[in-house]
Image 1 (tube, one colour):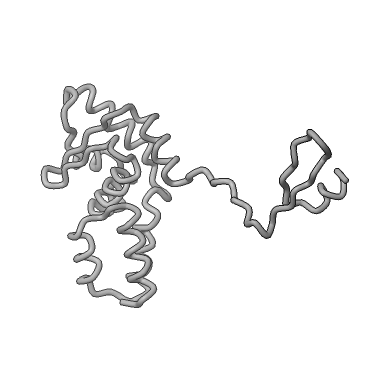
Image 2: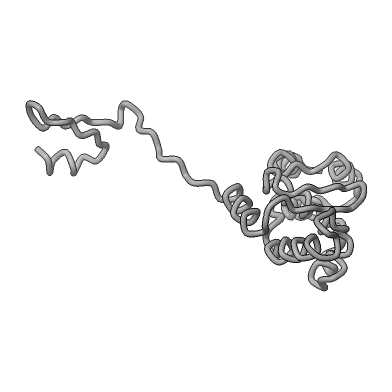
Length: 171
């Protein structure tokens, strides 16, 4: 296993909260360094190419009908969609683990019993997942060396800027 793969695996585990069993599987499976790196990169982008909105809608529907507001066996959900089956059950389960982490408490996953429950409607969960994946960019704080203060005159409020053209225009 390459150093690059170990670093990327660490980042994936830190971001998505994958369990130790998954780490053991990644370390113990014999595969080429390129294959191992590809596997780890799939863990780093669990929502890419995966229609998790449809998955959450399906679980919500089952939770409201056949499960009567109880935990839903996710193996049944996995088997109901050919696209999810094509990826393999372990990959599907890894995506559920990542979604649980991204949803920040809005999804409860029981790996031992292979059950899942949504604590909020899918729309709110999707909003949280999107917010976690794409956080708002904080405005950059200017370094004191980058700040110029333009005095407009007595009794006027100074303008703080880092744009030299604004300084010229206001003077």
